[in-house]
Image 1: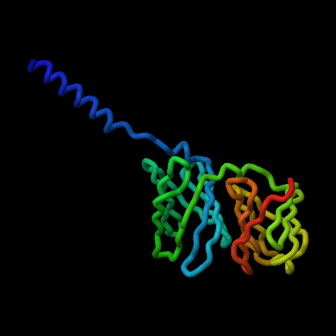
Image 2: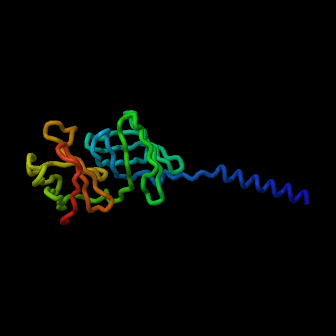
Image 3: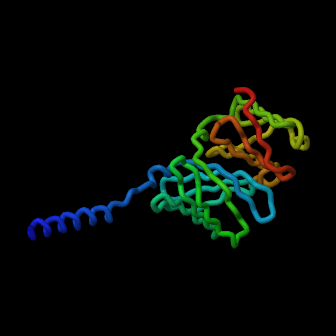
Length: 208
């Protein structure tokens, strides 16, 4: 009976040891993905962002003010983004690929409110027609035609940039600044745009 008890303890020790040493690596589910969501600066309106997570441990964050690099790591299901500028963001990835339990580096006056995996970023904009309440966007090749509303001071035909589900139209004078910036939502049928003169507008896919 004593020998059986000793053997049982040994087996329990081995089993417990195996459990402690088993760590699930969730990073493959994050590598090469694009995330979309909303954030804001202190006392400012909500803005859209696009987060492109690369395979090599780096990321690119895109927003109206430009593109910002950094590095990422995943511990369990907690994603940590460390920006080159010093900003820090931590969030858990839920089973339905949402960013939850978000922790912001509030000392920078910068707050991320939500995020989700965006699988629609591979589609092309060329040949599509989008409408908001008062504006229209028509994409033809590498150019976009902008009509109505807040686009009244913009020429009808403009070059645009489309990368990782992020749409940007640089200003004619300062090529590193955007006239407007937007992101494609996960449905693939909505574009959320922001510009200097207006808060975020939602454009719905009208024709493709």
